[in-house]
Structures are given as structure tokens and as C-alpha cells.
Length: 257
Image 1 (cartoon, rainbow, N blue to C red):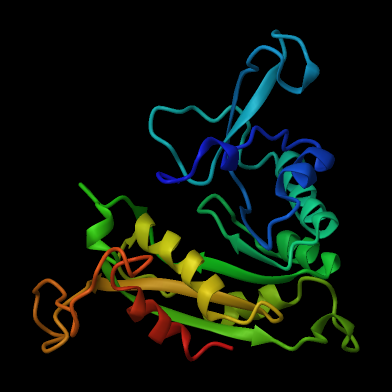
Image 2 (image 1 turned 30 degrees about the vertical axis):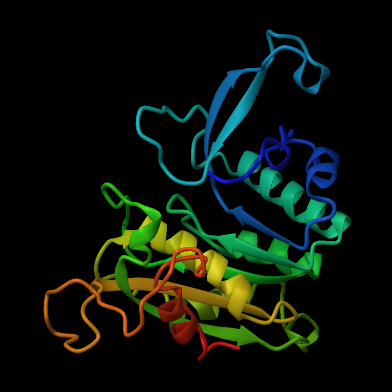
């Protein structure tokens, strides 16, 4: 985002599917969350052709300090509608693949899984086991911060048409098989990197679930037990790598279809 020009940052009415569709048409993939932190704020003059007295919703993918959520996490009618609008817009706009981040406020993934299944869009559903935390004084040159454990499974292309299958059933297997592997806090920067690397490494024509957890800070390659900063085997150049140490993520994702 730091390098994105203003034409890539577009005001969008997330409560109207047509508005979302208009903004994402022409893109190949989309990244969305499940339950957002929502804050009602005054609408800037002229936005959405409504009056200045109306309110809009400010979206935060995770909890933001100094912000009081004005839509409760358990007001599921609002959250389901926003998620449904986003998925419907992706389908209408011809999005090829959707990455869905399960946000910390999400208590039950099944309703969201059902919406995704019924859309027919291929997806990557990502859950982080562990609390999310910011990395202090983070810079691009630091890259991946923690030793991530990446687990997941890929769904059959015909999973929604199998006898006895009900939309969203994969979320039950996700919970039972790989979720809940809580170890250390997961840096938000690493979660963001996993999202991007999944789009770079994994087949967009398949759907899958991924769980990530951290087993601690990234350590030296020559001594995985030592509490020392990671030192790569090759010299990385920030003008060549989209994220420093991203080859570590690529290797971990190589076991996922």
C-alpha cells in the first residue's frame, strides 16, 4: 500500500454489492476478512449520494487501538451481509480466487464456509492459531519475523457435489484436523506475507484451508535451536524479493496443493 498510487485506493460502499463489484472489476484475486471491527463514522460530503448526516462504516480487519466498535462482533446479520456482499461481488466481477482471512473475532467459521461454497469461487481460507501482534519498528528489510508452522489441506474440485455433502462442511474438518495449534503470538506482518505468498505459490484453480502458528522467532539456518537472528544462505536484495525471506514461506507451502 505504501507504493500504491491513489487510483488503487477507491472509496467503496461495502453495504452495496454493486459498489464492490464496480471497484474490483478487472482484478484477478481478492483478499477479504470474515468479521471486521466496524466503526460508524460521518460520511464525507458527496460520498454515495447521501446526506452529511448519514453514517458509514469504517472497516478494520483486526482490532485497532483507540477505536470503539459501534457494531458488535455478535451482530451477525450485519457481518454475514457484508461477507455475502463481498463474495457475490467477487463472483459477479469474475474474480478467479479469493483469500479469506479468518479474523480473531470469528467464533464460528461454518456460516462463512457455507457462503463461499455456494458461490463456487475457488478460495484459500487462512486461520492463525495464536494471538496476533505487531512487530515493533518493523521495516520491509526485516521480512519474515517468526518460524511459522504452516499446515493445511486441499479440497477436491468436486467437493460440493459429493453425495451427502452440505455447503460449508469442510470447516468441520478444518477445526478437527489442524486448527487450535496455539504456540506463540503470530506477527501480523507474517500473516500478511502468508496471504500474498499463497497467491504466488498455490494453484488458483483449487480450494484449500491453511492454519499458521508460530514456534518462536526465526533462527539461524545453521543452528535451529539457537536463539539468534535468522541469517539467510544467500544475500537477499530488497529490489529483487517481494518480501525478505519469502523463500521460507514458499518452501513451507510446497507441501500444500
